[in-house]
Amino acid sequence: MGDMRDMDMKPNSDIKLLSGNSNRALAETIAAKLFRPITDARVEKFADSEVWVEIYDNMRGEDVFIVQPTSSPANDSLMELLVITDALKRASAGRITAVVPYFGYARQDRKHAPRTPITAKLVANLITKAGADRVLTVDLHAGQIQGFFDIPVDNLYATPVFAHHATTMKVEGNDKRLMVVSPDVGGVVRARTFAETIDADLAVIDKRREKAGVVAEMNVLGDVEGRICILYDDIVDSAGTLCRAAEALLERGAAEVHAMCTHGVLSEKAVDRVEKSALKSLAITDSIDQSHLAANSKIKIVSIGPMLAAAIDSISRQDSVSRLFEKAPIS
Image 1 (cartoon, rainbow, N blue to C red):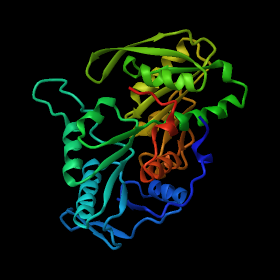
Image 2: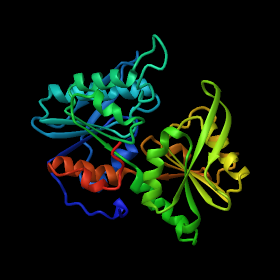
Image 3: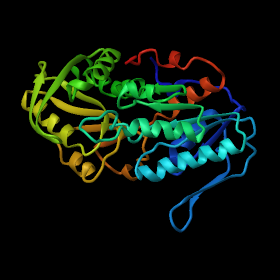
Image 4: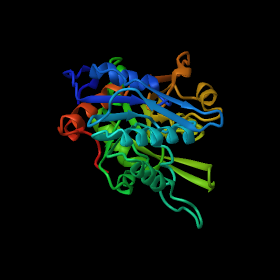
């Protein structure tokens, strides 16, 4: 599909937008696309770090969208979302949609060992109990998390946004050499969909682990000789596996390696690791606030603000959201 930045939307006066503190810049991008202001509110903390919220506009009967990814600091961001939702519920808002572009705690979506939590389900319960009527998110770590909610969930995909970004490589005449690479077997469906979208071939990296968190060996399944490879994933955290995957592809003859990951968690020394790696570029979205990366040479930021604005507008108008993302995977 085309670039969503080209989509024209008519002003929708029925929408009320609120923003927490985790990604104000993204909320402003969405607001500008919707021709709507961000509702005047204070989201602050008491001296002991308790979240304190006061909303100054009348919310009675309104269709309200809270833009608040639950990214680092994850606990603070989550509590802000819950407290804002509670404030809106008590203010008699007509419908409350939690817009959570990055859904924190999603990586703990099952019991991988005895006596471990399923935090994705816990957070789903918290958001629902706080009073949200609907959730809008992007590239959930696992699709089944939608089933943890007893309210509607719209899980959008960054595929069209990255597909547009990939055209910058096609302009250089490299389109026939592009190859999408899934960094692990579990991400094959996601990578295949992206490959089909940009009309590229697909390869897979099979990781062998000595123990949890430690990759001992990487086998490349597919011929990458002379190809321009794009490692495609939903989350880049420490970037260790991503950088090792780039090395493995180059060792097997890849011409160059790029990466595209929806959520740039980029914890600890990840940014420095990417800068020193064999990766030519890493594209991430602004689902998590990345304002501190503006001067970074390898990490590029593409905005999902227009895509979220289009989805919010469709939800408000009781229109189909899926029609906007026809090439997204269904599982």
